[in-house]
Image 1 (cartoon, helix red, strand yellow):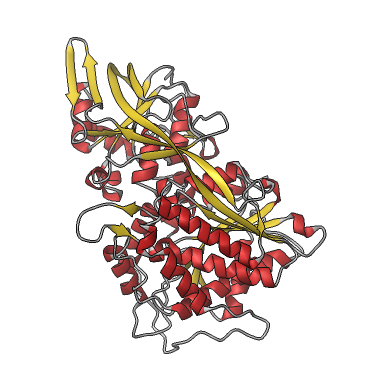
Image 2: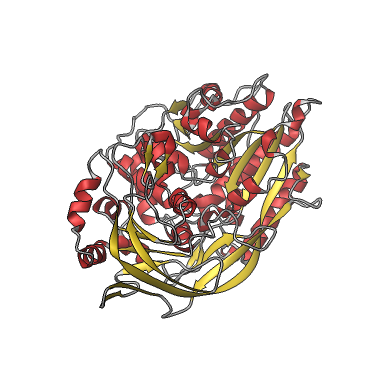
Length: 559
């Protein structure tokens, strides 16, 4: 809710993922190879259709669907397209009520113009900031009109991480207070564990648990480099979303936190100076390993905003290939891929963001995987979920993980497909998260069968594992991977790094992400085969993927 939901939309996890790749690619060199084609499938391996992949992408990325915006007519057409193919392949409808559609109730929140204000009071002095030049704020998921006034307490990073023996709230009373915290996390935190605890979701939860009613984040030099304030400003007037529970209340949110805001560096310095403190000294302290000093700022803040709430419904599309084993068919491997994109916006002659690679390609590969599994059912059952509202903050996958249409404790693994960059002859695959569970062993075997290389997570410090739809299921205890083509090109004349960089800078979330890009459908087939073989390995195995002993995510979420 509030700023947390705002960031879910404006700083969605895939944007952070792409930033990570940008850093990676700046220092990553491709491995040229004289080999221009991957091995052909053996007789034991199924054949996948380049024509089908192309037909799916051509349709899903057509102007007719107007960018597949969540809740739009174009998205609904795409959902019916996926459902019609599930039906054609003979998948069992598993969205609920004998339908392929699981309706996801969403609350759309739109800021009322000129309704947002933030001021600070110390004695008879008042400091007012200007929205959005000095600060940004979300709008409440709970109420259409929100105003909070409370004492300010500086709480370091606002992180409570008992597994890391760290708690900013230890011996700190923030009951009915607004906490002021730094963006980011302590530098000595392990990368992925730190990313988990430093997420706005976890920090909002920690603040609420300790009794706070609001949060003010201070932008830091590191957070500015990671995702600049100016980038956030570009889309602050777009609506944000939350999913609704059975009581028509925002789900998986902290109702205790009434509102929150983010101050840019200049405003943060001004506010800290207004309290008689030094911002630069706080930043210097934050770079030390020792916990930061926590203290009252000796002043209060008033944060107000108004919103218009609307309810809409957008479906996940769910189908099942039933397993052949009388007992194992009650266990499930789940494939996920997001069906939505960002719709129509911006300026210029072409304003439709078609989303061919992001993520019509992922849905197309999932459809081909479903088609072949339906012809050759394995022992365990396979669930295919085309999720909505990924671009709004992973809402469709989060909703399904909380309202699964099969028993969550019977889902043994998740394979996520998002924006597979099939624009050159791929020579390797990356399975983000493979090191946390025995899923990596299944990926390795599948890659070997196709003659492709399984590459490790190239930048584990960028925490990609916690930044896509599969993580919704990890938080429910399910081992999961995020599968993508790697950056190794089988054609020395086609530089995988360069092609990826060009896509990122020229086509990502742009109208030019269209089906007329030079999509390599041979690579699409190879990637689909690997994707299929991973699921087949798991579905026919005597054992199921397990969290590795001592793994942080297994210890925190595992069952």
